[in-house]
Length: 112
Length: 113
Image (cartoon, rainbow over all chains, first blue to last red; front, side):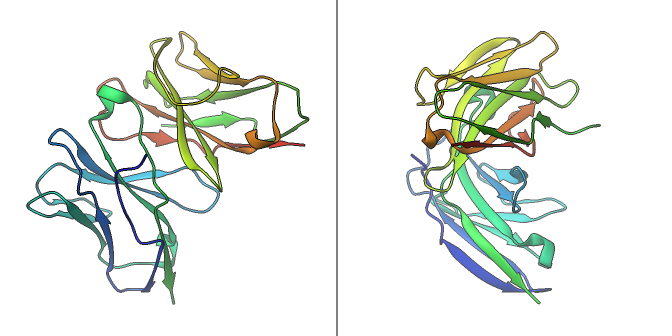
């Protein structure tokens, strides 16, 4: 079973920041927080991952609380193309398991 | 680099038949994982192959099997198809040292009638 809890859906205005929350209160010390997204009719796409520290890349920022029990994915300037299902996943490094356990994710609707 | 490719993209089969799906990973990637996506169960891990060996397996019946070839291409087979096997089957690849990113293909949409 997935170890994360996400809101089923969220809306965001185009050009504004989208903040997607995720709860993972049972995360273990060796587990990372991954974010993937799935745009309709496509395979999931990796966005970002983190262990303890906040992370930023060209797509998004990941804020992880100090106790690591929750995190927030931030899309700084959402566009219509960011409309997708966003999955927060908690898992060890893939080299140990080779698998990701997806939950139901958050459907983000970016509106004009 | 070309992405992960899956063939065929769409498939219609009848209950009781078997089906073979193919996945070509990104060049240089040696790990291939397979997932099943349905509206009811979401995305579920089927199995992972690395250097022609199955390293991990999800909770699926033995009707679901797979293999990997020396060129890292992978196939999955489903025998004695059931209506509930209708799903989007996704494969994902990563390079040997890749610990965080899996690169997914577009999937094969299987419909069982």
